[in-house]
Image (cartoon, rainbow, N blue to C red; front, side, top):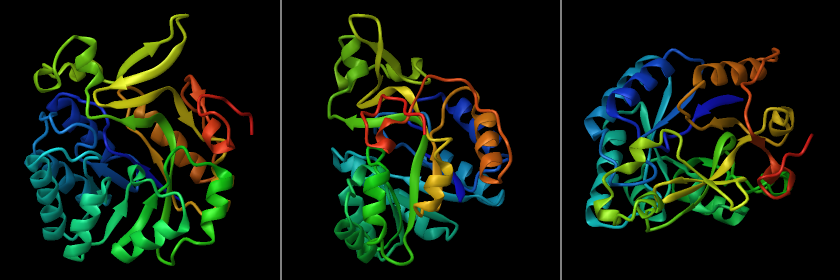
Length: 292
């Protein structure tokens, strides 16, 4: 299986982002997704910055994909998506991960191959065949799907379409037109003061009893616990997964990549400590931990 690094879901300062990907260029990752995949108001990294990062990663032998926004709310958002597509078309080393059906439509009209992202709600073979007809060469399984669902879909996956599974990180659960981080500070979304940048791994949300419940990341809602499918890797390989996806986090990423790479290579590895869950894969509530 290949090791993939999903798009950065948090809002980091430009230099921190550039340094992060410079470090990832030297790590044993096969595929790296770039670009803003949550909120169009985040502007620390411009397209030229992402193209610079993409060139460094491609020169280091990585497969690079630009992820599109999951919510297109304005003409400026649409133009930003078109610019990503143009960049991928102009550089054969780049591709696009479509996270919204408008992006799929444009890519299909252009005849560009693409990755069908996890926010497209691909839950059956019929929709996978539709994506393949539009030009998809890979699909990223929605994180809420589990082992039984993948086993059922596997027989219907079109030839030539790879399967990628989210195996580590805070689960992306939902997106909204409203910004929850701005609301926390009694700010309007259009005047949010970019408060997301103060939370490099999102803002923890607890219940009234003080238990970790969710993570707030601008317009995105994530799990509080880290999804973690370390012990399920042999099962994933048997289920036909060709890639596993790690989600970027602010600390310990080099160690995490090294541990998963070692496991994929059949070597023992020590995983960083964390508050883990794996319920979705085992057809249980996502926040649960099931001992395989």
